[in-house]
Amino acid sequence: MSSDSAKPRAPVMGNPRGSSNDKLGAGSESTTGNAHSLVLEHVTSTTRLMEKRRQTLIATKDLETRRQLWVEQEVNFSQRESLIKKKDLELQDNLVRFGKFLQENDGKRVRAKRRAADEINLRLRKEREIESLTRKLNRIGTNEEIADTSLEKNERYGAYLELVLKFVSGHGDGAGTATTSMGFREVNDVLARHATLQSTNETLTAAHRRFAAEDAVLKTSFSEYVDTQKDNALTLNNEIALLKKQLEKAVRVKEETRAQRDSSLRSDALAKMQHGRVCMATENLFRRCRARSAVKYKTDDNPLERLKVIGEYMGDLNKIVKQRYKENPGLTD
Image (cartoon, rainbow, N blue to C red; front, side, top):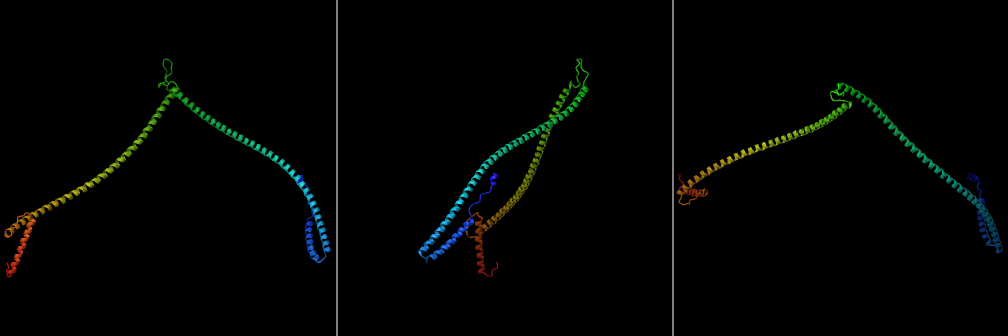
């Protein structure tokens, strides 16, 4: 491929200057032809025919020159076409080989990436396994240390319990069994007694906590009850004070009503007394007027009628007196 590209290209046959000169010559000839046509208009037909033949020969020669030029250009173009086709075939062959090469490289790259990914996954899985095993190992070591510590502690407790058991042990009975004064035969009996006491202690502690919680609840309830009763007492005191005010107001209204009633009773008694006096005076005057008047008034118990009669009598008496003074002006009595 590189050797083909290094080959020199074939030169293009033909002279561009010649083509331009041909164009200029054609132009000059056309100009000359125009001039001759102008000149030949005044010549004979033979001269004109000869001029036409000359122009035909020139055109034929020019056409032959152009034909040869085109043939040479066609040969050159054919050579260039064959060369281009050869290079195209070589390029296609090289392109196919390069495509195969790229495909092989892609396959190798994909396989390499897959192997690398597998190796990475395997490494990560192994690292996780190592970390998990390391944590397990650390936990086992920690548990072992805790177990050793607990063992040492329990050994000390065991020794202590043996000493306690020896301290509280008795002489034994006739059968040769060693019994303790507290009923302990072995260390397990002491541990069982401790477990029983611890369970009892936990039960009592739970009961104490329960009773303390109940006591707190009862205290809260009692405090709420006391507060409620205080509120109720305050409410009742307020109601009692309000009722006392209402009672005082009612007593005051009662006293005022009683005073108004007594006043009205006294006013009624006074009015009745005055009415009786008026009635008695009216009756006395009515009798006197009836005794002295010549008019016979009918007997009527209505004080108003009697007052009317008295008024008529006094009116008549007043008229009589005025009439007498009018008839006797010098009369003084």
